[in-house]
Length: 292
Length: 312
Image (cartoon, rainbow over the protein chains, first blue to last red):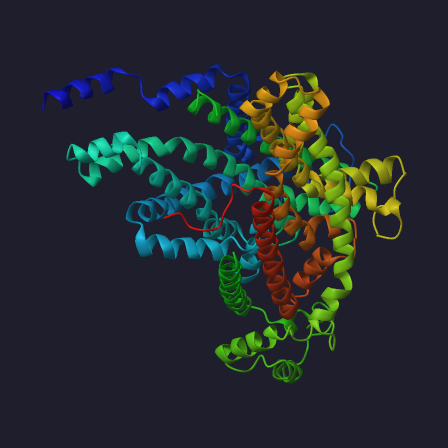
């Protein structure tokens, strides 16, 4: 009894792992810059209707395919729509797909991986066979097949990515649980009579969180990239709603004379992926200060 | 060993059956049939003709029967005839375009081994120097740049602005440069990171220190002790990489109008050519599965520490 209160007090006085990681992240230059830029992108996505100078869906037929000017900062497309406004609205699609798909992946993947790792036996065997089958195909090919069957649209993109995306997290959590189960402190806890609920809550979840955080952060740019690719192929966001990938695809018909139609959405896409990647790497460093 | 290979091959057959079932179900869940796409915008195909075509291709039979028939034919490498190019077997169309993808793949592999491997080695030998930082910058570029974005940027720079290179095609070496560059992003990223960390592991190892301590010439240490041991693990990443290259890149091939199977897949997609899509999906699965198996076996062949016998 005395032992538990003592360790409880020690634990409560020490700043938590996440709090310490958060402080390290804020001290990291790449970490803080990427965090600010991502928050800015989120803000742009949320406030797109207020920020956009023109209607992203309805074009002005009197000013079709214009080069950048003071009225249209990023020029106009083949239907006379303002490229800047479409890029601002496109941020909504990229952010929504990136975040929603990762939320879905976490909700599905963590419990499956944890159960497989804890239970072992036939549950684990079945899960690994399903993972074998699903990872036999390149993920982009899988998305394409799913999108043909499901039809275009934001919800279906997130659905397609969740159907295949949980595999990575499930495998990661399973591996974490398996290796943590064998550690001395978990075995010591079991020997002292801790129930499996206590072990899951106190040891397994807390200690397998770091790689999950990193994997999810790096999963966002992957999802953004995949959405852009699908929309480029005409399998993603249905027109007239703008998405960066779709703008690149539509702009490709006019790139000889109007390269700005491809350039601006490409810059938006590439830099968004860059900031998420930098955040992922900074997070990895912050969560694992010893480095590996 | 023989049992291990047999087990893996059986596993591959199981995976193939599952993948074929998934693809089959997905393709039949599509709301529009293949003959709804033909003549869209021009003339609408009369229902009678559609029914006739559906009957001809066996699309009016029960789905289960269609699937069993499909698998039975697929074992004999008969994936049926293409919907969009009537009378032409899927296998023939794929076989006709595959050499181009292989060609692009080989060029890409050579280029990325030189650039990615070279940068990885240079970075590890000069850890923390400018070349190490340059290598990291290159990998960041490869990570954040989608290959379709790089493809368009290259065309805008080299074809439209400078007018040095043709925008597409696959006739002369001039056509090859940009597709290879765009196709190399992923391989360079993987190779640089992997070669660098593998080299660093070996450089810090005890046997390299021993080799230096006993006075071996630097050249002997580098070539016999470091390179040989550092490059063995690289085989494990080259295997899956080759798998990715032999199935080709959808985006790179269609943007640069390279007549390979990646571009073929996009064409089949827009035409809703189900037999082509299914045939290619199965082919991709076989190729990827076999490449993984071969790379695992190669790894065991070059690293005596790896065995496939289960520890008791």
